[in-house]
Length: 524
Image 1 (cartoon, rainbow, N blue to C red):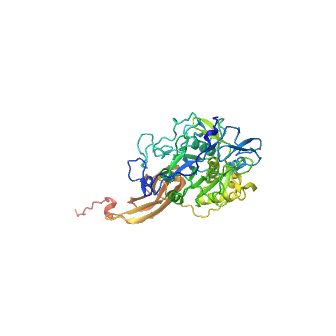
Image 2: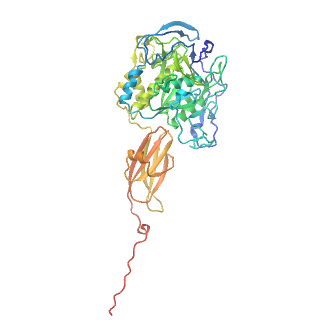
Image 3: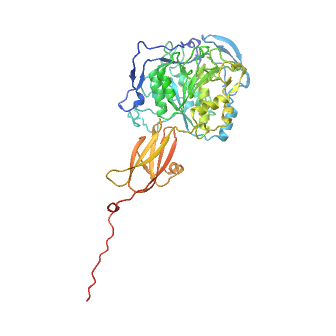
């Protein structure tokens, strides 16, 4: 396990502005396809975002956040990066994972869920993350843009920081600070989905569930002033990409202290749930906000860092209006680049706890909306007197209570909608079938088959005729009858709709008819 040097602790937490960018600019990832509007990002000003990372030397030998028995202690890290008081663990101050997972395994639907990590990169070769990476099923490793999304070879995600397919900088190891550029994102990834019970490393919260990680690098830089920083345009591109490619949840363990209208707008318009770190200044964000955590949006959850004794970490930001709940973020052991492991402290480590829990919640049910998920998570927290007046709920994440909270959808699930309509064919017989899909996600399959075909039949047989992956298209029906259209989007959401096409086929179009020969009978 890698030892973290105290000199690597202090990071400047205020956002830095690029000079004199006061007019709208358009920034686009390198692509030969001009039709990918989601890569065109217009911002009036470029803000700098950075990871929230506080680190210290190894101490704990197990993941107290999952099952806190009260047997260890550690020195608290202050906002300055120096050590503070000794924290003595208190049994029961944990996220209730053991009982929560037992309940999950007994009752969950365990549907596929995609979580996007928008952060520094992630080591996709890390042994503890194998089997948990999202794979772009329409893309091949061939230097071509197979799925026509404007990016070549985006197999597990994309690097918007360097505009490349490379998701981890393996050449970035810093001898002085003993860390890689992409340790931060890799550490977050392990907390969410590291493989449990494989005899190596650590266990992730959703490691046993059907959850895949979409890796999106939008921050980078070596140790020092530029460590873990990224710009508005890269982050907005990353969010657009995540939703287009099927992510339902985004982990955002970064922030800045300037309100950014471009970032707020793309989050507001998204159907995804955003889990945001509240920051490590030890300040009240009701008075001095940190963004994006402080955006008051129905699909944003802001997370503070709680110690193993139930107290708010000295470095953690707080705010009874602007911070929703707390989760363990101190002395967190997780994956690092190069099949290594280490401990980090900060709200950056607390956010993935809630992200992992959110992934379990989404996977537990057939359908889930961001607003409903947020309500369930916040209404099921474990109340602690130490958090009263510090965070909105006065409590910490509780996975068992979260999964056992009764759920009645507040709104109809409309992330992907399929509608069919019929129109006349000009100059010909038959009908025009208009196929319309309302979704921010790309499609991976569209098929049509004659007859009233159930979703289950389509899933088993994959029958019918494959159509283009366009969300708006027409299909010419030449024979009257019932037709069923099947679609599947990037998130695995499947829909079928049936339409009855009634019309008369002209006689001349029915093919030649049998003509009997008639002979005159003549008298002999």
